[in-house]
Image 1 (cartoon, helix red, strand yellow):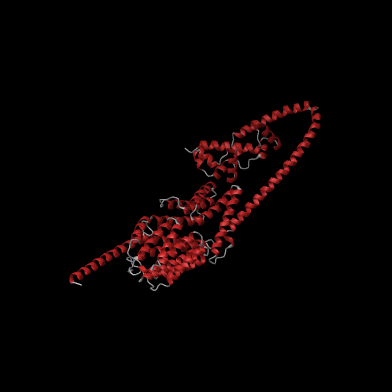
Image 2 (cartoon, rainbow, N blue to C red):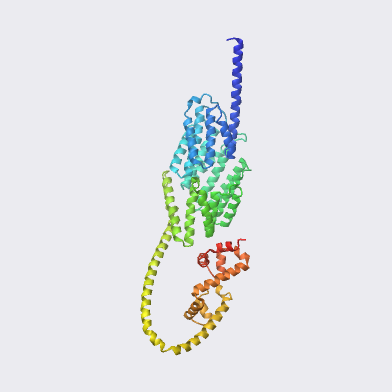
Amino acid sequence: MTKKELSLLLLIMFLCGSVYGQSYIEDEKHHEKALFFLKRNKDSLLFYAKKLQLSNSHCRVLFGMYYESNVLYNQDKYSLCEKKLNTILSLTEDYNKANNYQYSDMLVGKTYNECINILKINIYRRFFYIKKNQGNYSKAYEYLTLSKKIVDNLPIKDTYYFRKKISIEKEMAQLKYSIGDYEASLKILLGTNKQIKNIKLDTSDIWLDQFLSEKSDINALIGVNYKKLATESNHFIDSTELYYEKAYQLTQQVDDTLKLHKGIYYIRKSTLDYFRGQYNAALKHADTASSFYTNKNIPIIHQIKLQSFAKLKFVDSVFKYSNSALKLTKEKDAYHHHKVETYKYLSESYFEINELDSAYKYSQKYIKIKLADNKSKSATGRILKKNEIAEIIDLNKSIEKKMKQAENTIVVVIWVVAIFLSLLIIWRIIFFFVKKRKSNSKETNKKKHIIGENIEYGILKKLKEIEESDLFLNQDFNLLELSKLLNTNTSYLSKIINEHKQKTFRQYLIELRINRLMENLDKNPLLRKHSILALAESIGYKNASSFRRMFKNYMNETPAQYISNKYKN
């Protein structure tokens, strides 16, 4: 080879090396950007994931594909995400492309083999989250075990190793929480929290943000477990609030401009208000949380409002948020728990207004799904606690008992009608024979009739005065009280009302009270904003539910609908 040829070869090698070095630097930047946007912006993450897939390094290409699968996961496209992850796993077996591997802080792993194993850890964890969200706890546990096995066998116990170890322990605690084993979950998390205190990262460490996010998640999950245990011991609720605050402060260290962190913080405050029985405060914090989201249809916020309105006995609002909650959770496995709980609140609310068929339908749905969920959870070694669905089972029994009573009532009514008809026939026969005898006393009856007319006129005049007063708005006002006011007996008074008002005393009283309420609503706009119970009490009713049914039977719409329709402008 001549000197000229040798010089040319060296020049080509130099240029190739420069290009490769430049390409490597670009890959580093793209990977760093992908990590930065991992939990910040899906469009930017997708952009840099695509850039990584153009790399000369096979492991970087696979990481780019993995980051792309994260975007699918966050969009709840689980089937597409799983398909993508399986494709990546199949490509990890291509060892022919291992020669161009170059170690970097961004990838972690001194060799190509280590890099692929770290990629598998992330893939199995993503599978874990998908299966957990779908309620398949047995499969989720399998993927978590696979991920943990690889982490335990990592040869270098560096920052990355400890970060992954802590992350998997957190996920195991999450799984324990999901199956209701809160004590076991808390034990894991408190142990993990102690380990975290011994790990120090400086502000230049590339894993700092993710490490802080892990710490925040662990503190939040500790708080959630304490809240669950607070049902048995109320002092745990203070611990819940403490760890929620710690979690929020850690997210502020990651990025204090992220609205998502603030939204989550106020959602947690809202759940604490609900637990403490401060339902109006829970609704207020839920609205504050919603203000930090561009998309206002956040299932957990709707769920908080739904259960708060259920506790406040605002049945109309329960139905409103139940419809929106079921619409939001439709075909979204991640919101499975919210959908199931919605069935529970619907059952209770329908029972409250005595619509037993609907109450029974939703209670049956709740029990069926809950038992099926527990069967899946039991595959992880968890045993069903009897009190977990005891409340809804008790409600279901009450519904069945009430429905049985209704059926028995119908049978009794049929018998009563049959007896009544028989007696009516007998009475007609007797009446035929008695009629002649009555004709002999017509003159006497005429005199009595004149006297009776004078008495009736006096009673009707006094009734008119009472109609213009507020006496009938008294909760204790009844036929006996009215007869005392009019100085007559209940039978005679009832007869006069039937003949002159063409209705029973009960119908007559309902008409007076509803007419008075409508007059008051016209005169006083502030009254239109009062609760159903307040409206009921203003016209003599103690119970909001019975008032609502009575009003609807009379006006063919509920009080809320009547006010909304008439005064909508």
